Image (cartoon, rainbow, N blue to C red; front, top):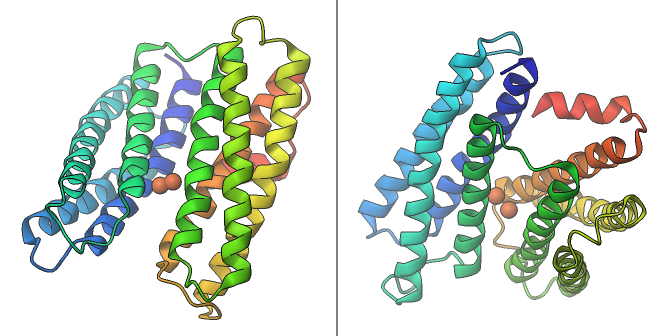
Length: 276
Ligand SMILES: [Fe+2]
Ligand SMILES: [Fe+2]
């Protein structure tokens, strides 16, 4: 275990523990007032991930790898629990046991997939079994393209229907990302023959173009929501949350690209990686 292990672990935990903390808030906001037990559980998860996030910032790259290995294992337990909670909530919604609650089933499934992804990453880090680059490129893109397609759908459904132009833009992004996801799955099923440098490079280039434009759309939506210039039921923090996930995907695409082609990553992106 090395310095790279420590840096990578802290980067993943800093980013995803904040995300898990915010999911707890979004779930709580969607529950009905009478669902006091669920509200309390969500609040507990919020506190748990807030504490994990704070601890992740108390370490730096010089931390003892053994300590970080134990920290990863601890976080893994918390993430497993929030995953179970999210799936339980999904079950309750789908069995119509929370009539009138306000989270879409797809959103609850979505946040559970993000928890599963985070948990899997912690397992990979602690076992030292990260995917080789050609597999990582396809797996991460299949995961994140679906996440991006979902975000476009949530935005489209949570904007006020009178915001016709923005709703239409969101619908277009949803279709574009569904298409990219299908392409990614095709590349996936053509493994390992599809894992040539030119094909993977083109795949990254094409995805980058669309993710950048979705990221810009999310930034605009976030700014408009924050300044109360558009009508929606989107919490400003949710708007920022989906924006940050798009930024994360872009950083990952650029890291893959530079590893694949040997071209250095622009400094500005390295700095944004530091902030996570
Ligand atoms: Fe999320
Ligand atoms: Fe998300």
